[in-house]
Length: 192
Length: 59
Image (cartoon, rainbow over all chains, first blue to last red; front, side):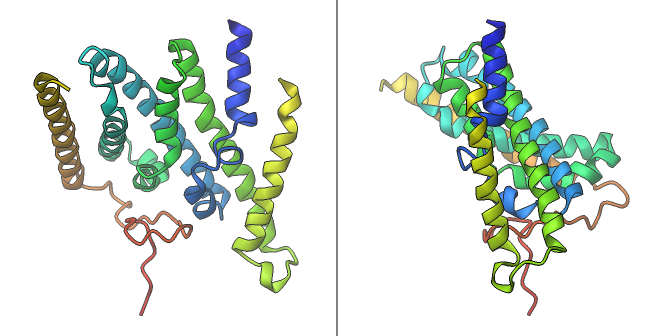
């Protein structure tokens, strides 16, 4: 059981990475990766929202939708729960922690449309995870997203001062880097 | 699908939409902390012009 959970954690963080393997969350991956500080803020906000959304949607599915036989409403329910959760989190941060709001709050509206959040909620259900597996997958996936986002932003910061051909400057060379990162991460497949 | 499930589904959907609208309005009315009035997300990624963080083109 324990080794299975460790394998799931490694898989969700590295091998089956949301960005580089499943091509999810590419909008913030490209948009908020120019500076390491922005990437760190976005990564932390994504971890927070995904963990909260994963727990709430899992509970709602098995405690409300299944007993009422409304399983077909999972998609629309999860979308509305994520959007509501983002509003609630933003309001909570505004009132309780101005410092945290300054670093995370500005990225919260972006997360509503981040497909990694919805993917985690849906995979928890479709794969039939029990609670330990759900917890590991719900924590591992956003950690993988945050890790890749931070590494990518560090590379992009160095690319700003690198001698890149004119036609490759900006997004083109960033996409080449993303492709190389995806290949590098796929090379980790042998560790499991 | 029987009528009871249909009514339950509509009520459940209505409740979720109601919760979202309530939280959206509450969040909008909550004042931002001092020093956070003009924060920008520093996002220049996608071309979704309906995103609230999409940088408006200056004309």
